[in-house]
Amino acid sequence: DAMVIQNPRYQVTQFGKPVTLSCSQTLNHNVMYWYQQKSSQAPKLLFHYYDKDFNNEADTPDNFQSRRPNTSFCFLDIRSPGLGDAAMYLCATSSTTGGYGYTFGSGTRLTVV
Amino acid sequence: RKEVEQDPGPFNVPEGATVAFNCTYSNSASQSFFWYRQDCRKEPKLLMSVYSSGNEDGRFTAQLNRASQYISLLIRDSKLSDSATYLCVGGDADKLIFGTGTRLQVFP
Image 1 (cartoon, rainbow over the protein chains, first blue to last red):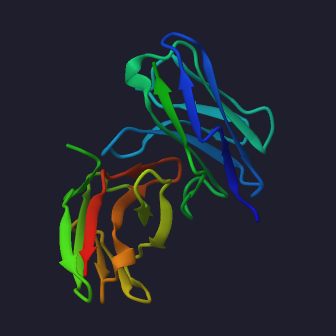
Image 2: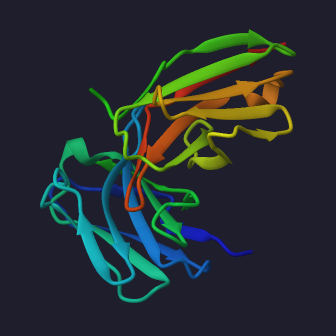
């Protein structure tokens, strides 16, 4: 089935140790998004790619970076994770720029120790 | 003021009840609206799109009032399996903003 796949489902990293989360999609959607969701909070958009064009939200910390080497894959790099970065990280895709809703991956739950 | 605001609940209702959720949005330029359902520790899943003309899908009815910048979701004949958090989502072509969600708990 076409879908959005995130790996790993659970990630434990040490304080300050770089970590990479991955997302792949078989939907051939041209837009990919990364959201951060903390407990009992709304998913918060970090950035998105419209094709190869990168769009960073103004309040996304510099600690968060992203790469999209091709249509199918997108990575979230956290350069120096802090305790406050512990959250669920959700990857989503859409075929237009959000006009028809998003398809989400199952998320990666990040724990920082 | 949050861009998308919802009553966080929880709404505790018996099986078979009708329950309504409301949501307001602040950006009058927003063009796209949705309701998503999120189960505990799972990803959000699209429940339905929301249109000014109203949108019905089985027991679920969504409505958009652009003049009041208000979105609603009505669930009829609640089932135990409807227990979840319902996220109101709105935005423009480049970005969708999520509300914090309204938690629904249906009890037997």
